[in-house]
Image 1: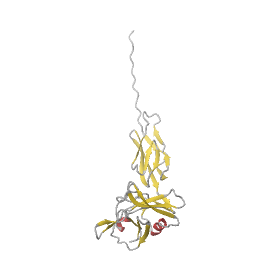
Image 2: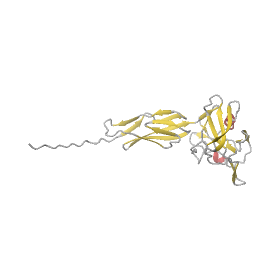
Image 3: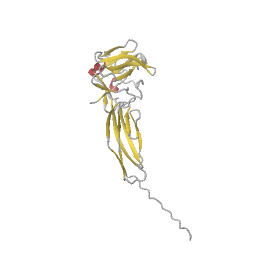
Image 4: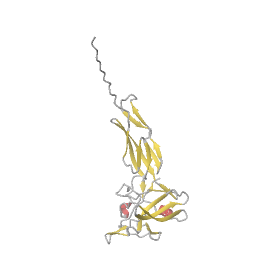
Length: 240
C-alpha cells in the first residue's frame, strides 16, 4: 500500500494593535517603572515587542522597564509587527532648596547637552529666555539666590571628567546635587570666550541679571548689569 503524504500550512495571524498601560509617565532621576503592552489579537503568531527610546540619555528602556537618567522628555515606543504604541516620559530635575533644576546646561535651543560637564551653548540674554526645552524655563533671580544660599545649599569646586566647575548640594538631602561647569562667557566686544575653565556665568530671567562663580576661590555672586548681548550659559528649572 502506498504511503499517503499530507502537508499543512499554518495561517499567519498578524498583530492588529498594541497598547501600553500608560501613555504618559513622570519619573525622578534614577527611578524605574515598567510599561506593560497589550498585543492583539491574543492568537497573533508573533507577539514579541521591540522597545526603543527617542533619547536614551534621558530615559532608557529594556524589556519594558524604563529607567530615568537625566532631566528632559523622551518618547518610549513599543513595536509589535507593524503596530506601535508610545509613552511620553518626562524625567524631573533635581530638587535643591525647593527648586527643581535640570542636571545639564542647554545646548542648541530646546535641547540639553548629554552630560553635566558639557558646557552647552553661550546665549545672549534675549535668546536665553527661549532656549529651554519644553517644560523648563530660565530661573528667576530668587530661584538662583536659593541655589547660592549657603545656609541651605553647600558648594564645592569639583573637576568632573577633566572639566572644572562647582557642585551645589542640598543641605538636607545630600543626594540631591547639580554640577555647573565653568564655561566662561562670550564677550561681544572682544569676540571671544573669556574665563573658560575658571568662571561660570548663568542667566536669570531678569534683563542683565546674571549669577556667576569663580572656580579657584569658590566665590559666587550676582551681576545686575551684565551686558545682555554677551553669551552666557543657561541652566533651566522645571515649570511647576
